[in-house]
Length: 102
Image 1 (cartoon, rainbow, N blue to C red):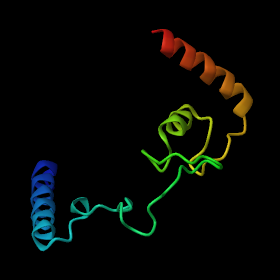
Image 2: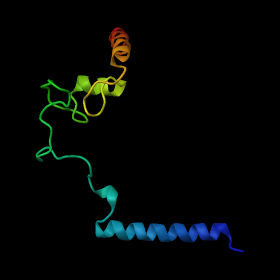
Image 3: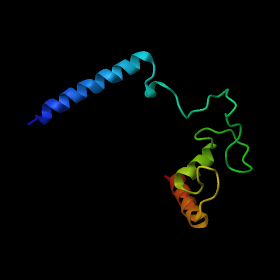
Image 4: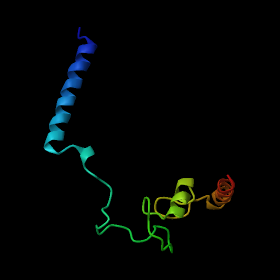
C-alpha cells in the first residue's frame, strides 16, 4: 500500500521543480501583466465607459463617481444601468448621505 504522505511530498517536489523551470524560462503566467491595457496602447480608454460621461477613467475604465456606482451595483461592467436601478439609486443616495455626515 502506498503511503499518502510520501506521494504528496514527491508530487509537491515535482510541481515545485516544474514551476521553477517555467519561471527561469520566462513562461510563468504571474510574471506577465495580462488583461491590463497599457496607457499608450490603442485600447486605452479616453473617457469613462458610462454614456455621455467625459471624465477620465481611473479604475476599470470608470471615473471615480461611476466606479463607486459600479461597486454599489447601480451600473454593470459595460456601463449600463442595472435592472433594479431605481431601488438601488435610492439606497445609494442614502449611503452617500450617511457617508458624508460621518
